[in-house]
Image (tube, rainbow, N blue to C red; front, side, top):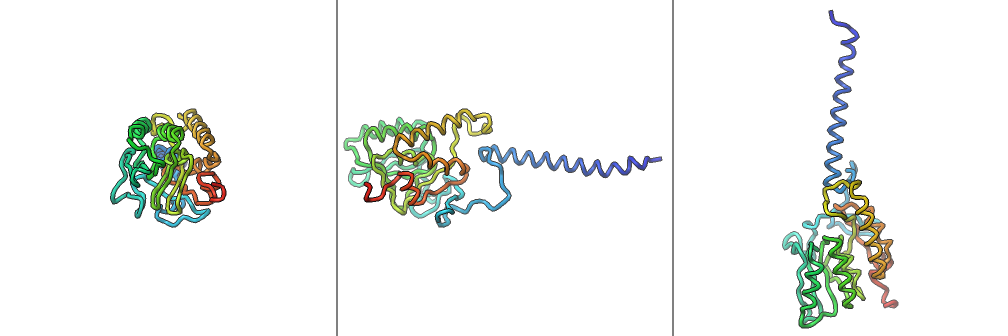
Length: 254
């Protein structure tokens, strides 16, 4: 004869077991999402708009992947940017174009290529989706020491680590058709490590970046936008912010 109390407990056990498995599965999905997005907890609300959507003050965060920047002007995806910086002389040698992602070794390599030019350009034009922060800081310090100006053209992008190159210019020219954006960076050797494992590297890296910006005459407060924008999104700085953070200045102040 079956114990009625045992029968009454079995459905409860089945429900509790189902709930437990659901919670374990959800935890696994959250953990996998953390690893893929730099420990950003996935949200259930609508994601940021596409990068092709118009940027307005107060509505400046967009989805971002370096290989999915929009046309026109930004060469991706129809003609992707190089996977590391490429130096090209333009404007009859008056300017040098640095185009492509900022990869390991690019700081020293670009410094040597610029040094070897028979004619030194007056300014460096940038078109880059970003890349290595450490390489950008190293190259940026070289550009400042050599007294280069920096600029974007209409349609050019300067995202992620690229604004640190832009900041290095003695004078900086950003047209309304140029696009400058910031977001969180990875610091340390592995982007697959959970953030809590690399806290020391993250803090040291952020401190170095803020010190660099101050060294270049940029208001480090711009980092408040970077720190709250996940790596798979980009915060686009509007012209008022570019002036406020001293990436550009009013004509009367130049």
